[in-house]
Length: 289
Image 1 (cartoon, rainbow, N blue to C red):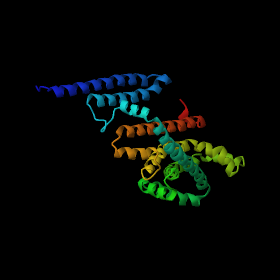
Image 2: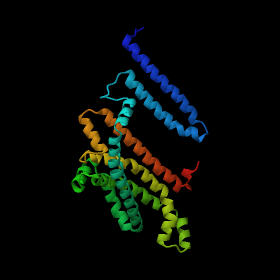
Image 3: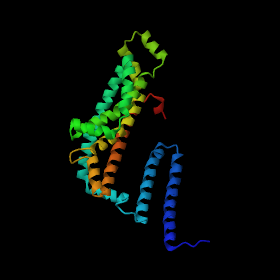
Image 4: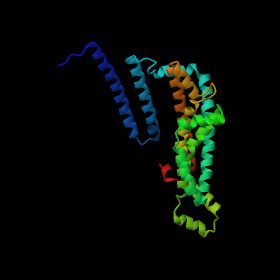
């Protein structure tokens, strides 16, 4: 039988402690997930996230991981508290000016083009392949070009976001406009409805679940596109600029603070779109509980 050394025994104790914490929270979540209470089910993701953060904190403290390699969540939270003005300015520059403006322009253009494509078979055969081609373009190649075209401010970041969100929303919207069946269209024709009456009273409402699928996908793409675009040139403010600047100084806590803000902003953005979807498509089977 092997004899554990002092260091080996200490490692086993630390791993065992972390395993116990994981198992305890897993039992709690397993019980809550089987509950019929909506409140209990809502806190399952929260408990799971807290568990991961706690294990992360324990690993960083118990194993003495350097802050340069992986700062603990408490270090990241302390960095956020110390850098609120900087983080807020970066958030406004990247999310509000770059990501949100590009998201609104790109999604709005995609919906308009989808209606045109639906109206014209020629555009359907011509624009969709072009859109597929544009969607396949690498962002690391597009971002520097947009910076040269639109300058270093938020306009170039918004242009990158427009390119990234346009095609997913376009494809979903085109599919949604085709979601109605022949009987529904025949009924509108029986009522002598025009194309636009049929579009606004039948086909657009039926396309809403498809549209919101594209809009939710685009929320994450918008923030990613704005941050990556800032790697290739931006004013001395912005999440992407801050990350590249701190990499040179090995400022890992600040980098993780920016990542945390971006993750929270992206999650809140996705949640806001999902909430709007629930209000707009309350009639759809996917929204019934």
